[in-house]
Length: 82
Image (tube, rainbow, N blue to C red):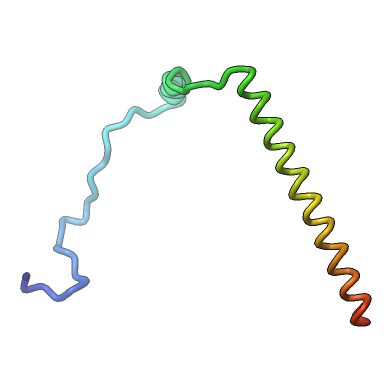
């Protein structure tokens, strides 16, 4: 246990350590190119399959919301709410 009350931070000089990073637009694009090489890109077949999956899920959600809206509209009509 320490003598300091909870929530108090130890005193510092007020300066935060500055990370040593390169600055400038040129270094940004060099880093960008290096990172892009490390990415595992999907194959064309995998991209097609995943695109189909996304479209199918979107269609299912749209259909579900359409049916839900239709049912709620019918319920409101039965209750006489406009």
